[in-house]
Image 1 (spheres, rainbow, N blue to C red):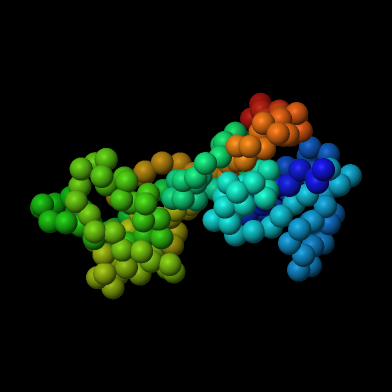
Image 2 (image 1 turned 30 degrees about the horizontal axis):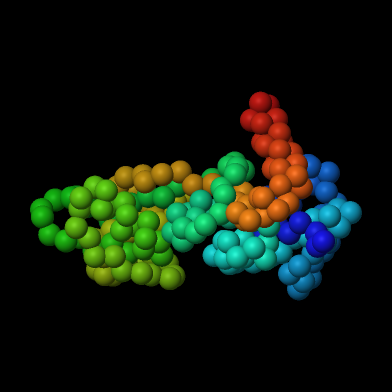
Length: 214
């Protein structure tokens, strides 16, 4: 049987997850010295790390080629999917927010608002719940440009410090929800490799609890 396989979102979440794995006693030297390799052994070889883009982490876990994955709640909310979300890892904290040019009254009048976002499903769902008519425009790059250029009335985006918004003349209109890294598990894997995955998840939960207790 192959090692348990966990997909990590490249970048900041990857680095934070490696720290977590090391606290659990795994030797992550191969990951820290990965070079261009994307599939790496961890510890005694019972665990294998796969490095991927955030959206692909969800795809790999959902399709069972990876048993577990670490990905931001923002990606989970945008993509959806069939998997178990088993733990809030507590790092990668930020928030979804609606932002507009400073001084804008977004809800003045009854016209359809145009909202720019990388997260079109999150944006559409949020305004539907508020019963506000919106036209959502997908932006792949710097979404802050959209209100500045007159493309949109507001944006929905991930906000950490708010510095980028301020530097571009925007301010938060309202917060949607907090976001952080989550551990997800393949549905079939939870049954087929219940003991291995259960032991790993329990170790992660104990580490999170001990960190929260400090």
